[in-house]
Image 1 (cartoon, rainbow over the protein chains, first blue to last red):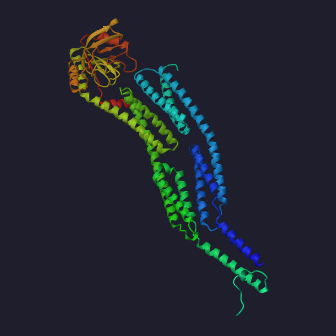
Image 2: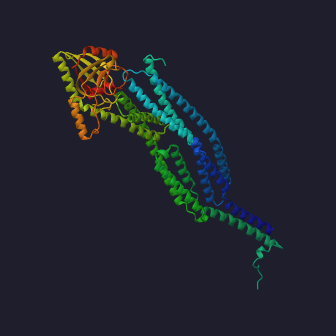
Image 3: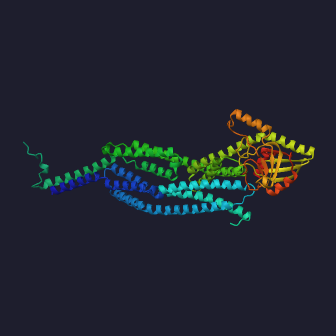
Length: 199
Length: 390
């Protein structure tokens, strides 16, 4: 009997000791951090900024919780392991989605660039037919200058596109150039219509 | 000697008597109570983890980040993050110490500082983004006005090609800044609008300076124009007055304006002719020296004038002496008023071109010796600007 009671006390003590010495799930934590790094390398921060920021927040909260558990006499890292696994999973999922999103934005950029080039050719063709009244030549010269700048901008955008670092930026730049070309085309068409020139 | 328990008897479990069983139970209860008490006391002595303070700091940083403090208040945001990182690092190092020896005061202090900095960053971000938004909005509007004004006033001016390209580049940057404004990227937008301002205002100021410098000759122009018209009135003859701004050729008879035709000049028309090949149309008082028609001119009909006159030669020589022109420069000649105009630009090599139909009229009235005065403008600079703004 005496033996059993001692055994029970010893078990409780050992259990308490074990609880206080529970280990941080380092492997899961490292995996979560590595998954986030991979996600960043895959440009998740560019294509899914809100989601990426959310994952970073989760990691920060998890690190706080680790320290909270380490601060206690009775530690429990089970929830942390679950959280770390969740972060790793979500980060991997996001990384996987980046390629699809990137391809989507890339396709949009490609379409916009092709459209801008077509518009540029249209504007150049219209310039040849532009009316040359009072100051007409000066206006045409100005438009030619603008088209040259817009063409240069599109060439720069092509370089940015070929680099593949940020298709979002490419989209914005092409949109600005397209707006400019459209403005010139509208001006030219209005002037030609006024002058009775067939477009 | 009184017999008693020997050391180690407590662990000598067998054989048990009734009395010793009671003792064991009592001992066990005492031990359990002691353990529980020990645990309670121990837990009471373990310092509370600084989670609330650290969590508040983190939440404040997240709020600041969501407001884009990284962009609008980078210094404060960085300080908030650094303080948070310090709090976490100290917390980790405290947790490595013996549990009862831990002290989280510094963790709390850094966490509170991080929270404060993050809140400062939020406030600063709100006011700065608002201010940047307003600046961007007003700058886009101002530069659009300036750009439109430039195009109204200076579009037909002979500005260097790179100036015109800079203007076009500025125009594109305004559009890009407009996209940033729509996407609430006020910092990026302001960077672009600042660059656009350099191009737009830079080209505007340069063009304005050129024009201001040009109009410094206004008194001379006024004097020449008055003399020419008076001469026509007194002699009851024809006289030609050519104005570069607006680009017109006036035919006077007896001091009264009889015809006005649209005129075109050399591509570098703003200013006096200085030498051969400068594409400038000369300014001064001249007269018709020869009338050309048929096969003797390729521009329908032409009126040759006596460029260079004495004043032109004097000024040319002066420029050579001053080093303003190379020693091998030549003054040029063969300046005419001719046909083939109406092209809508300034395309001649220094001559004055008018439409063939206008040339026919002019040719009919003008004879050898008819005065031809070429000036910048009869308008003052202010009158010119207000006419363009209209």
